[in-house]
Image 1 (cartoon, rainbow, N blue to C red):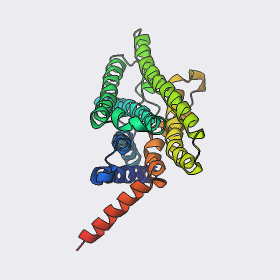
Image 2 (image 1 turned 60 degrees about the horizontal axis):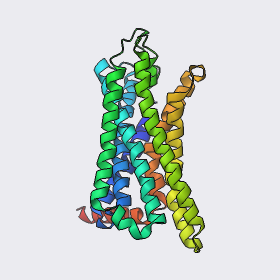
Image 3 (image 1 turned 120 degrees about the horizontal axis):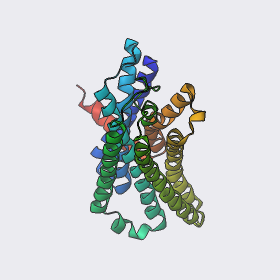
Image 4 (image 1 turned 180 degrees about the vertical axis):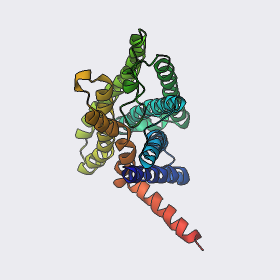
Length: 287
């Protein structure tokens, strides 16, 4: 388990690190699309670094212990990065909508100040949601044992340990996260309906292919991310089982941060060109 988790973690670190470096160093990638991709890569790095290092340490030392403060910190940072990532993915769909449906207004609607404001709003929303969820989850007395049946501290698993009357209050705050994710999902669906309508009206087959190749990877990651997240937080207790919970948790917490760099850079010529230049520069600097 340790070596498997280490391989996944190193792949995520390498992929997201390369994208972040390429976007930061290549001035040709200083556009709204790649600015939001940089934010996504940073959030992916934070999200996977919140869960896997502790899981790897536990696997290496054959233990399942985590301190109460460590569990609270893990919940806070995981919810923070996950909520902010959901918002960034929504903003990226808006970026694609403006680029394809309103290309003449792209520079006006997505100027540098507008991009910075939207990114700050995404990070701020994640921070607010994390504070609310963590404060309310850990204000509940835990009287059903101290074993979290997951490889990281996950809110639905922690709520199973509570028998407090304020349980409904925390479920209400959990619904806030679900409504936030659902709102992002509705906005993205509406954006992509408009995008696909505009793409299908394009006379050039090459332009249609380019538009679809840009949008479909984003949509695929988004569907995996949101569908598994919704399932975790909304599934009935009767569907809960250790194997199913572990599988779904891996799908929404580990797989997207690992696959995002591959999906966004595999067919992106600008990213490939920037990475090739970075590699050539690194080789040139070696003695």
